[in-house]
Amino acid sequence: MALQGLVDWKGQPVTGKRHGGVRASVFIHVLIVMANISNIPLILNLVSYLHGTMHMGVKDASTTSTNFFGAICFFSLLGAFISDSYIKRFYTILIFAPIEIMGYVLLACQAHFPSLHPPPCDMINHPNQCTVVSGRNLSLLTLGLYLIPVGEGSMRACAAALGGDQFDGENPAEMHAKISYFNWFAFSISLGGFVGLVFLVWVQDNEGWGLSFALAALMVFVGMVVVGFGLPFYRHQKPMGSPLTRILQVFVAAFRKRKLSIPENLLEMHELTAGTGKSVELMERTPDFKFLDKAAVDDGDKRAWSLCTVTQVEEAKIILRMLPIFLSSILGNVSIPLLLSLTVQQGGAMDTRLGAISIPAASLFVVPIVFQMLTLVAYDRAIVPWLRRVTGRAGGVTHLQRVGVGFVFSVVALAVAAVVEGRRRRGVAAAATPMSVFWLIPQFFLLGVMDVTSFVGLLEFFYSEASAGMKSIGGAIVFCILGVSSWLGSFLIQVVNHATAHRGGGHGWLDGANLNASRLDLFYWLLAVFGLVSFFLYLLCSWRYVYRHDPRMQEATLNDDDI
Image (tube, rainbow, N blue to C red; front, top):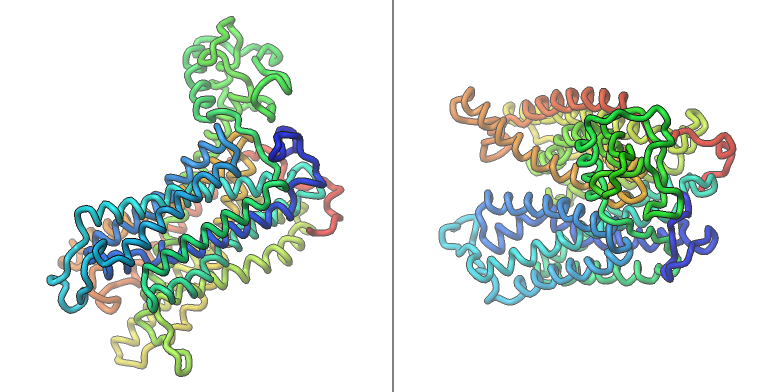
């Protein structure tokens, strides 16, 4: 994005030397690390809290946990819409961060004071003697749980877009740094998750959930303060009004003028000149979706819902072009959360000893996160510079190619997981020595590579392809993909269990009390086939996609030093 339309905190035009760049993005990375120290352990361990402390049934606890993650993804759209339409991204973060802190504080108070949660009991041996959380305490729990997604979801989308605003993609000196920013954004998520899973999970198990929630609130507060210190250095994108209104106006105006013909002279199409409207990005007309072009035909009716600019029409076209990528990416991501959670369950049924130390099954989440961080560093500092020289592309490969590579690795990981699980089952049947948990290292590694490629690639794609007035929404779309994929994964388990129960005499593949009574290996093979079909569907959609900007670098940048 060019620096036109970007301002400093005083509303003055920014300068390349004083504002933005890596220096400004560091503050955002700290916020992401601190926020994920808090929320990743909660996302992954929420079922344990709801079941063990609040005495919910496993089904209700699992449903609440899934809804919690989905709410984070939904509210990322809310925060993105507000920041693109009405409030600068930085101030949106400052408004919503205290809401997340308030949620953690409420949960800390509830976990600490005995009168606010059910009395302790033995949920394993005597569950009928336990009192399930209800009444006012359930209301307090629900309020605390859903204040967190309101704040966290809004911060996620705004932080990604605010960081992207700090680099000018049209400036060769900043192009490489902008590409690296999204890699380091993902690294910050992984680093926060690693620290949280090591530190906060230990606090949860040894010092109690009350202190854990209080520390989570403190982490978010520290991140908010740090990102506030960066205010003098940021480049701020001025809000441009509701993008949803602009897009709806295009469809309404195009429908009203459906009987008009498009003029041969494109100069007769309505467009504002630079500096006369809210838009800081004037887009040229593209040949696809011609039925929308009629919205910009000037027939004398100047009303907003009857006459749109060419730039407005192109914004609507961008959404339509990205829709197949969005849908196919949802299908490509369905198996990923399932593989992650089921791999940890695999580890719990294997020999988890490392010498004299026994590794808790929940700590296995740390393994793929470590692989993600190592792979991100290697990819950004070694692989991308080499690919730049080979392909001539700024990112080494295009965004959609990077995502596709991730989907391929996910299919390979599923196949490897199926083979390992089949071998484990045969060992159990033969009463052999339990397999070591280190047999899971290959699929953990493949999971790490998949996340480095697909997640970051999607983040780069939707941010770069979105118009200047929809950058936050572009980032929020990625988190929505993850949320919808998670819901579809849960639905897929129910469908598979129901279908296999009919054929298996009432016992589905994943209905067993433990993995030995289930057919996880067959489920992995099914997911591998599903992932392969999804990949080819994605391949078709991405092959047909036309980028807004040429992904190849200018020739002059090929010899620049990597930043």
